[in-house]
Image (cartoon, rainbow, N blue to C red; front, side, top):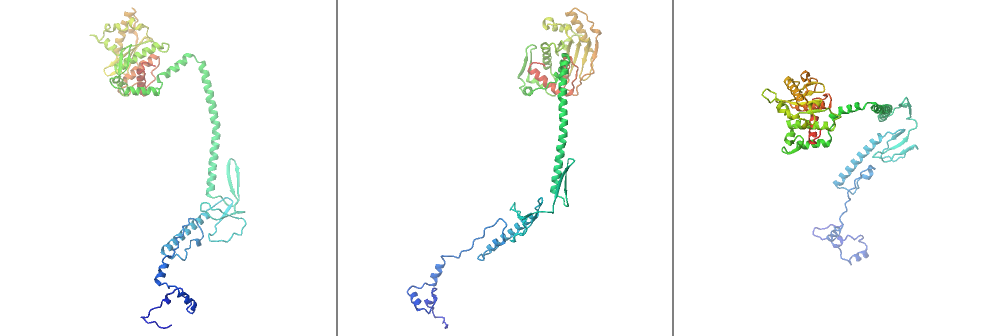
Length: 465
């Protein structure tokens, strides 16, 4: 090769990329017929087809051989190397997780052999069968022939599991314990079924005996047993709602009007039946009038009684000497009442002691005068004035002398007492209610809320029960 001067220019033949054999005149003459492209035109032609870069390999989400994740030799960029490292790390992590899960597999009568994911050698044991992919667990199983042997036997209602050499795992023991507990529970229920059947039989037998005895009992005893329950019959939901609406009514609204006694109960007067209210004259007098109407409706169930209102005793003692029979003489005329007081079993007189309600009873049936105070107070003058009144009344209306001055004067001590300062009026009207039924006073302070609501319901419906 000869030396080239710095100023010497290369010939165009030297730039011909298609020139392969300079000794061939035929080819040289053939190339000379076409224009020789320049270096710039060759570069421009090659720029139309840029080098194709290999795309990133798709990320695999399941364990597979490492060779599948090797990057192509053509990928030489940093991004490609980083992606290959990430995939390899994920593969190693998935492989370790799968192997750990395969090692923890325990099955009855089978053992698990962990197989290396990279090993392609088949297993020589014909008893080995391949495990399917189940939740990321890979491996093979081989039927155990002599390693584990289990015998189970049921003796004395207990489940006993024995092994000739090895025991079950902790999970199996827990299963056995749960089975034992469940079996014991079933046995207990079975034993109690007999008890339940026996109790049901006894209940049915006793109910039949009760019905039989009720048929043999006198009718009067049955009525008495029912009469003991009547004062405590619970209010229905409709009655409760009716009472609540009345308590919420306008204070000037007239809730009820009783024509026979000419008493009106407004919303304001009705409020005294609330839990801490003091009963007023209108509510007490209307309730006593309702008790008289109840007696007239069912005279066979109640004693024949007369109920003076709250103004009677005040009028009786309004005279100059503390006694005035003439002021109340016309209160009990035959024309007005339709009967005389001498015909009554009991005569009830409400007594108002300034701020406290008491009850006096002229007990014509038992020939005695009674004084009932929920605070266990005593007022002998009340009984003396009532004795004088009854003697004058019988002498005036019947022309008889009954010797009332010799009757016993009793201050009742065996009676329910109040434990607050607001229920004296409710105690007083309930003394009247129970005595008019011919019953003992078998209630207490705990019944007062019910008695208030029951009285409110009876006043709203103008009917005592």
